[in-house]
Image (cartoon, rainbow over all chains, first blue to last red; front, side, top):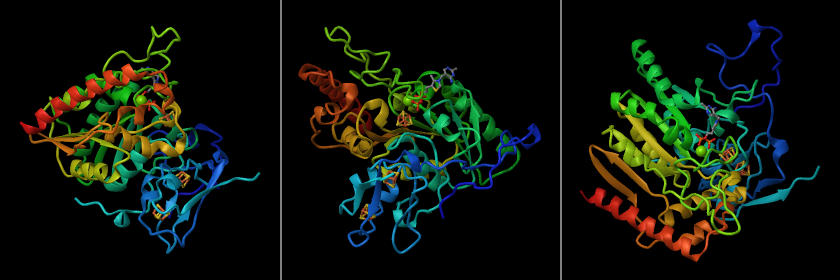
Length: 99
Length: 298
Ligand SMILES: Cc1ncc(C[n+]2csc(CCOP(=O)(O)OP(=O)(O)O)c2C)c(N)n1
Ligand code: SF4
Ligand code: SF4
Ligand code: SF4
Ligand SMILES: [Mg+2]
């Protein structure tokens, strides 16, 4: 399981609710990074040999290996293209985002 | 410790950071945290990593993280390790992370003190070869010939980028006779993680200097980060080495180096370099390797 957006997050309304400083929680994601992407990586699972190079090199750690097929967390993938560039089987294509 | 990707945790302890697409720095940090685990207390100082992991109200570290002033990585982790020791927390690893500026320049005095006292911590310097977070200024780790905003280039050729050779942090830290000092690269993750695993199991000050390419500051497309990091090693302009028990080991010594221009020429920061500049860089490289090999042989 990858971390995910904290949908319940509300900005503090007074200093007693301030999040940080000693005692504040660690890991609090209040925004996604998907809007940064121009190209989206798409895995052809038929070609994948599960070498896990993409999983290891992905700077954002968004590739998951817990399921039978690799997963990509598109909320936090920035579309950098490293996974596709490093895949020895050319199993990842970078597809232009429409929107 | 042999690293097998399939056995590593799928859990991410660094996530959702605002680093540029393709940034090398989070590769180093997330892989280090896979080895060190959730009982790691981190200190990050002013740098791209610091700025992109703590954008209020977001925090991208899923372990304790103290943010300290730019020169203070080493002094902060020294204090953290003393606190952890007093509390008897034996399962905790203290990890300091700083950029090349925060390590080789402004953080160097505190780092030297840390190494001399041999405080029980791991210090990772992720090296993108300039002050990136403030918009690409030279640091003492900027390589010869590189353009930055403070090592400019002009058309007449009187300004040709960085004019000095880089400071050798590996030599500086190992001269303190610390238990462990290593160089690594985000393009060689297995080697890097093995070094982190080694550091985790040793007591005292452990230092890992990891080359972490920066698409924004170096000027190359984001998907090439691993490729360029690898080329740096294959051309001999970066090296993978370890210092342990007074001995230097080279982890990878290419028999023949690839031509330096295969690494340099495609990067925007080296675009102004000419044939004669590549020759100078090759000569510097060969001198550096002669010293390195002599150390490894002794
Ligand atoms: C005392 C002090 N001087 C200057 C700064 C401004 N500053 C913040 S980050 C930074 C650059 C850090 O460079 P480096 O350590 O190489 O990390 P990078 O940003 O390249 O990852 C500078 C100069 C500061 N925060 N504190
Ligand atoms: S790099 Fe390619 S082959 Fe390897 S695991 Fe990823 S998608 Fe599969
Ligand atoms: S495009 Fe970049 S961020 Fe997205 S999965 Fe591939 S390597 Fe990771
Ligand atoms: S400027 Fe470079 S080091 Fe900084 S976040 Fe962007 S890619 Fe990473
Ligand atoms: Mg830097």
